[in-house]
Length: 152
Image (cartoon, rainbow, N blue to C red; front, side, top):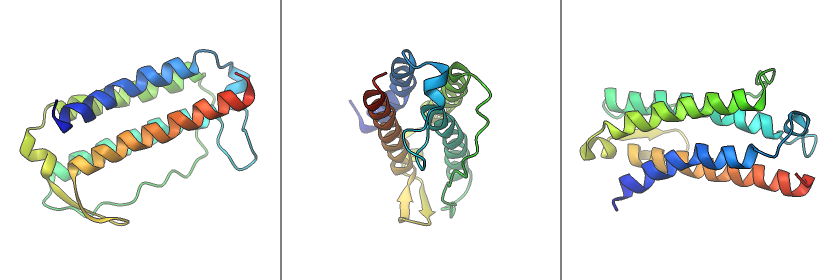
């Protein structure tokens, strides 16, 4: 299996993994912060949707421009958490489906398109996709840890 196929498969599996992690989480538990300076499960899911939208815009820009200099994606927080956890999950799932469809439409040469990232310098589209996979893993592990620590 190619690296490209493995990355796409990882992107496709994250929404299912997230849904499994969220099944036993009540609305109240989803909003509880494990520490004053930490995000709640709901905030983490909102963050995943927020960054997914911005990463897709970045990937599209990489394809449209020659070696663009992209901005670091910083999430200011303050997400609208009035939607139920299932609604936050649906937002992430929809955005991820767009990302996967976009990536599946690229040819192998597109995956090597260059860009300049403010923190890592010169890189390629495929490394940005790997960063999305790593980001997913980090936050899915964080949600699992919150659940375990809270007895959920």
